[in-house]
Amino acid sequence: MSEKVFISPGKYVQGKNVIDKTGEYVKPLGHTALVIADKLVWGIAADRVVKSLEQAGITAVKVEFQGEASKNEVNRIADQGRSGKVDIVIGVGGGKTLDTAKAVNELLGSSVVIIPTTASTDAPTSALSVLYTDEGAFDTYSFFSKNPSLILVDTKVISQAPPLFLSSGIADAMATWIEARAVIEARATTMAGGLPTLAAEAIASKCEEVLFDYGLQAYESVKRKVVTPALEAVVEANTLLSGLGFESGGLAGAHAIHNGFTVLEGDIHHLTHGQKVAFGTLVQLALEQRPLTEVERYIDFYLKLELPVTLEDVKLKEASREDLYRVAQAATKEGETAHNLPFAVTADDVLDAILAADQYSQAYKAKIGYKN
Image 1 (spheres, one colour):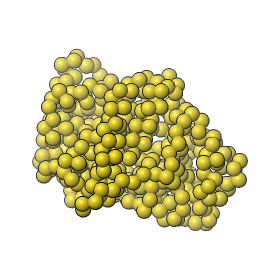
Image 2 (spheres, one colour):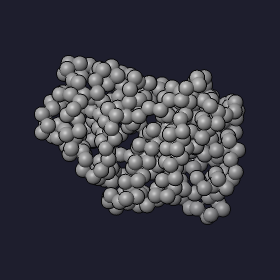
Image 3 (cartoon, rainbow, N blue to C red):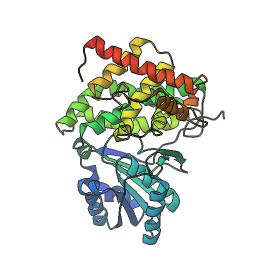
Image 4 (cartoon, one colour):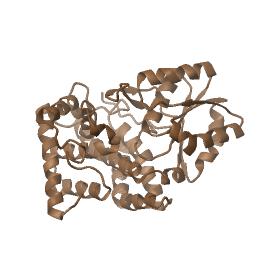
């Protein structure tokens, strides 16, 4: 592959209370909408979406997401969409709901609208979904023919979510430049199906810059449930910049480590996507032999955001070397994004990097007198 490819959603809209303008923005796309949200999100935002749709003369078919972005759940919801003869699919909620909506839309061949209620992942803008088994283990990346037609991001809704969701999104977005940088060096193929463009490189780099500049202020903003310029900037970085940056810039080691963690059982599965990516990012930095001062900059930032930086933090303090090797094997299996790094990577390499990242973080905590 020698072509450069950049892809993106049709339109991105962000602002306070923009969710109440859903009907206005969706109206050009069709007449009947399948609205997907989990039980909690219906009360938070999805009912407002339906009200706005109906005010715009759009029929809404409501369906409750059952909690796992699996092929079985996608097929179940798609069947409801077919029976309702929908021409728009709207996902409202977190990453797994949104990934499910995109996968449903691919089966129905309609237009998809994504309305995140947190800024916890960079899933909203992409033309792919991460699918899991019904039990929650990583299954596959599912690639689609087009990106979402419309992204609506209501920063007022996002400001009301627990701070953990924002910090998780920051951790996911912090991996964007680290991984894109590796892909660019390796001249590897991105999720967009080609080499990274200069636009993707610039976006990924800007994403990290915004997060280091405003991430802590944004995190404090959501603790008080207020929308500030810092929060607006970080929501855009978590959602748009990271979304465009990872898809057209590429994934590498950090997300491969995240996927490797899914082979384990236990409390690690209670962590968010971003929490696991945070530790995966440190593992990639260890693999890349980055200077300790650079690694410690990320560790310090993550600690201030109350993100995990050690094996104990990701609930793996008691994990055996054999279990961690299983993670390393899964992270380096054929087709995994770890192979987008600009050097050969083996399971042994990843295991050593996992242990090294844990040690670097423990040492930094001791150096600064950090107390859990």
